[in-house]
Length: 145
Image (cartoon, rainbow, N blue to C red; front, side):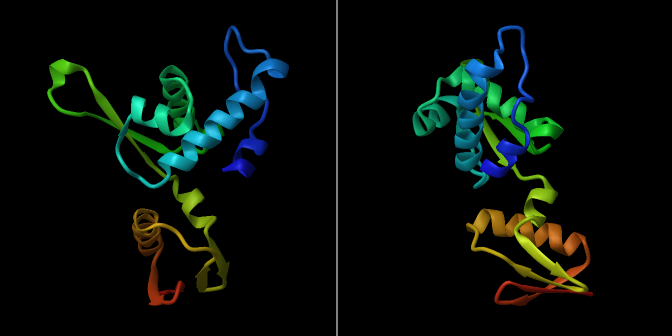
């Protein structure tokens, strides 16, 4: 994600935003939230805040950023945890397909997974690759059907 954050530096905005004062801090927050949430697990803002050491309001802002095309265009799902009247919500990050495909090395009709991923990310890679017409051969290798 660091590469993605570097690519999008100076693209934060807001009425109180000052690039010199805020860019490095916001990019670091975005990286921490992304690295934690890319496993696809459901977490509340407080759980994310505890894990990343960032304030819950900042975590919420970074989750909104991750939905924007310039920050990956990922899907951020939201659902209630427990009874709705308690007002507790949890969030799940699903990676954009282009992010998933960056894990692969493509050559002609074949592809090889470039690095090990956790089981949830692998499931997303599997679904994305099969939607693109690839068949899994084993050992991280794929071939176009």
